[in-house]
Length: 87
Image (cartoon, one colour):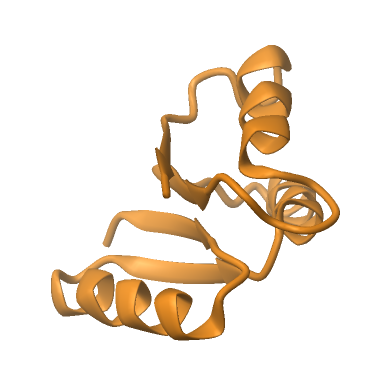
């Protein structure tokens, strides 16, 4: 199944979006903010795990969705990884 990293600080929204994605047969890994998402991406890279998509909120504490987007598309490690920003 395609793997999606879902990044959303609002727990209700995160749960709702994850439920929809799982209903469409996506494997969903959840992160509550951009900093947590970066840790997940780094951990997965070390284990040769890859995501097919990052779906992220914009306004979040610690690291915003736009900062996350910048780090993902700006680095060689994840430059191929599509990112969808939601609000």
